[in-house]
Length: 318
Image (cartoon, rainbow, N blue to C red; front, top):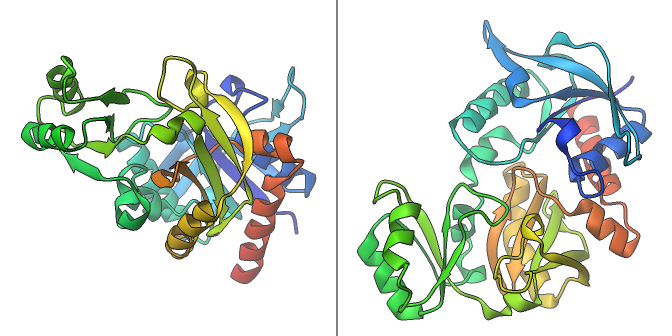
């Protein structure tokens, strides 16, 4: 019987072909004979207690000029699908949360949803690192200006960032003499009404912010070190960081061993850890990237490992 896979993602016409990890997953699934169905967040809806979607049959191509073809959209009960990949990029806002409730209903109807909707809500990509303090730099989550000032005085060089961003947006490096400290705090906390995160600055960022991928709690043996562009401290490809393939270190494996069992228990099947130097800084669970870059650097097929995992889970559900 043909496996039916739905994907919830940003508009497929707007992806960056050579970098998009979702496309890599879809190409691998199609190569295995899966039927693909494309949806955006706005296509999901709930009716009489059932999760539905306006789903469009999708064909994908490994072609930078034409990477997709869409069929005729129809409304389907999501229980018609075997598996759904939730690959909508942040921001992680209330609309995203509402979507996870709809996908949780599809899960209740027997669909395998990756990543698990409840765990997407539970595991904030910045905050979730705090469950593993042994792996992380000194950190503070607060909306209190005085606590933030005390943190800067203690560690001098620090990173301030919002809890709901991605791609390096609104990430600041400060020290205790920074004249912009107050205005940055005001903006990130929206005058004390929103939580933000502070972390001790890790100087090893000059060697890259490593993206380490885990599938069902087990790490891929290679990572992408994203080296900040000149004059910046953010290791994000979206703002011009250079990606360099690297092997995992013993410390990387140790961090993965600390977090992997909880990721697996929570149904967070595909996760990207961000590791700077010896420290875990973020855990990306919504739409981790860098599959294609790591594949290209080391001749891998990470999507094949993910699809192997998905197929094993589907067999167990039968």
